[in-house]
Image (cartoon, rainbow, N blue to C red; front, side):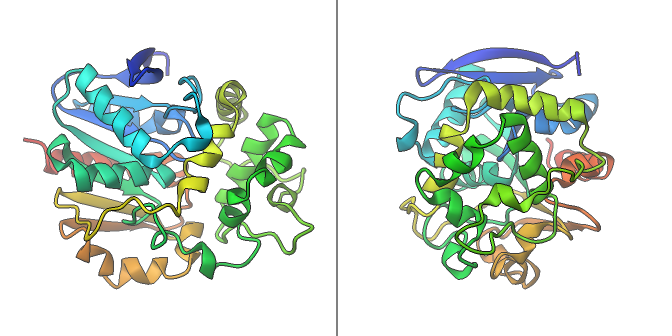
Length: 314
């Protein structure tokens, strides 16, 4: 890990925390989800750098060691897209491979739709193609206690998380998101953090040292922007009609990813309907893979990603 260099790059008036390893003209940009930060890509960054690529991972604005925007509650996914474009410009990168997971897939898909000239190829993990808006994640079709619906309520997650230290919040979310069912409270008296018993251990592939790194970054940033983007901006229409991604794309889904239980998601993928929006799409299911398949089974995921990158490198 010590060979990964870290610094800050100013974009759009904010300093983004940037981690980097490798060199050369073939650039791979990694975008994280929640409750993640750049560190979620530690295994993949080293692997793609060893394969001859320049690997860059960022903390999005408002996350980890990146600056907070002046008005976090007004944040949108388009802000993240603007930051990525500005970062590429500042670093003199005309085009990059983009690899994104979970909520990071939304700005990645927006990049693919709106700025295909900046994307060499696109790989996403855990979220099939969808854009922010009412036709995205169908929260209205999920149970009332569904975690996304809960965290979209102003103040609710803040009160829930505020009962615990940051390290315990991250631990609980990792445990919940590693399961096969969407985290859902039973009734209005139960909060999402109540779903985890204090004695439940971390997943075996996620160490106390890993947890400490995550906690240190979220202790710096807090959860204020992370609750706005993705959760409270998730159903806001991004204004794009008839979206299509034309760049070569890859979707990696763990067979045991809880997102597969979101209403309509598994059928959307397995039926091939997703290819109506992403025609040049390869889909790979990873047996026993969870929502954190890239951390759980890094060697397998690294091989898939490097094969994809090599296939589409000129």
